[in-house]
Amino acid sequence: MEPTNPAGLPEHIPTHVAIIMDGNGRWALARGLPRLAGHRAGTENLRRIIEACIEFGVHYLTIYAFSTENWGRPQEEVQGLLHILEDVIDRELQELSDQGVQLHHIGRLDRLDPTLQKKVLHAIEYTRENNRLVLNVAFNYGGRDEIVYAIQHMIKDGVQPENVTDEMVSQYLFTAGVPDPDMIIRTSGELRGSNFLIWQGAYSEWYFTPTYWPDFDKEQFRLALEEFSHRERRYGHVSETEGDLAQHA
Ligand code: IPE
Ligand code: IPE
Ligand code: MG
Image 1: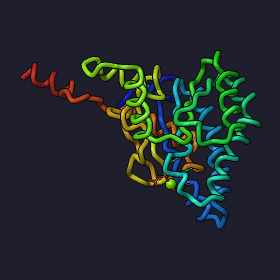
Image 2 (image 1 turned 180 degrees about the vertical axis):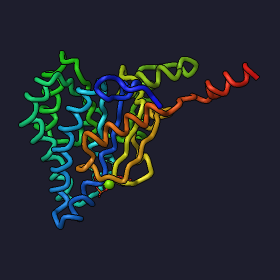
Image 3 (image 1 turned 90 degrees about the horizontal axis):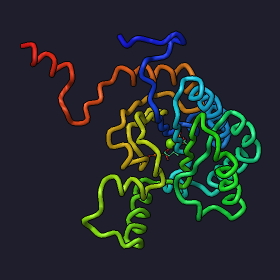
């Protein structure tokens, strides 16, 4: 059993947690509410999880808020999600900043209307000096789109094929400078990646839970961290314990 620190937290807290915040629609449906009520409840929950990250010592949190494929949802839902993003910036920016959150955006801003683009850029600039938690908001984000965008920029910059390396590709992604996620959590019971961090997640530990996102509370988050703490990350090598056993055989 992994030793726990005095706060009851697992010994190995991941540096970077990424979350596919899924299940808002089903959460609402189960309560006879419109889907947008589920998205609003999901936003409320995000506040709790941000606080938990700060308390537990997670330094990077990446959240999947809107995918490049989500434009295909009914117009009313898409507009509602865009409105929620704007509303969160308008109402919560100061508090997030006071908590020490540094905001980033991953994905493309160009499909958002200019006013919203400006608000996002302002929020990033406003929180630039904060350093308790880096919050990457994936909005209009797609893993494939991100790789296409990186390739386009490498070509524009005249990068020669023999100079392309793993590290260089990482530096051309929206997440340049951010360590790869140690753990990716997906709520709502779906067992797929849905175009999220497909490059950066190459060696992430996945954690799936049937809980819908609005109900994924601090205690459930702590349990996910606990589980992470028991995982052995082998990166294609052999188990450390197996190596020990072989040596003593
Ligand atoms: C996740 O919840 C939020 C977004 C994709 C914006 P969903 O809206 O996908 O909820 P379900 O999967 O339909 O329950
Ligand atoms: C992934 O969830 C995107 C976000 C959580 C923002 P979806 O609900 O869009 O994914 P699929 O359609 O189940 O794969
Ligand atoms: Mg979904």
